Image (cartoon, rainbow, N blue to C red; front, top):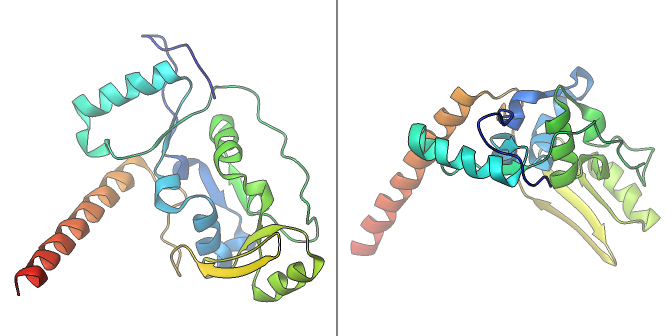
Length: 200
């Protein structure tokens, strides 16, 4: 994570991350799993600052000019050459990183640092059963966003994201604002419903 920097000449933030990620056509049926693996809404809507100072400056700008974005996550990832991913422990199964193209080096490096897509696999239950047999730890996401994993002796499958893709990749700032408004409206509706149930 970068430090220092900041000031008037600081590079602009990168984001939202979803704007820089494209799902490869051959993996289009795996969109829900890929979105879940890359952090779902919080991951796709995140912005990237090059240093802690830039992060603070971005937060001040958001508070002043775009307060609706205050809940968006900001990742700190310094600008440097694109990282070389570590080799997969399961080269016979496609990884989340294999399934996407990222058009910005800073976004690519942030994804590797915060979500390790090179270590997350894309595969269905059949793939998971074969991986369970190998007894080598893994985490895999299927086409419905289901997560399958082996940690030590624990074999498990659980629903951790949306069953269907939500179009989080190639999401621009306008889509982030719209999504935040929808999430806020849903939260307010739930609060009203909960209050009504409590007084009934």
